[in-house]
Length: 141
Image (cartoon, rainbow, N blue to C red; front, top):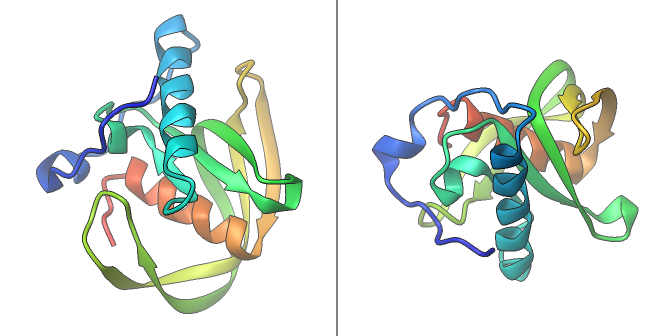
């Protein structure tokens, strides 16, 4: 189900709680996917707090896999390399803001079957994931 986009800065600045292997959190992930899909023309990634749920769940479009939407539960960036300056926008905020991202990251996360995974990402996909993991930590660019 598509949900409304959260724009409350005080809410978005709160660190999110860990997701659990529950039907409730899987339903949040599906809502997140549906909401991202509905906003594909202006958005490539979302965190659950952007739909009003303070859980560490992210969704992102990966163009390297044909534009498929990936879901990660409790993502943790474990390595980063190649810092660069950039500007980013956010569906929850007005305008663009300056930030530093990394060209390559490694992430440990749980997949949709709640199996632990570890993967490396580069380029724009890495940038999207970093933005959404920041959301989970309550960091707003």
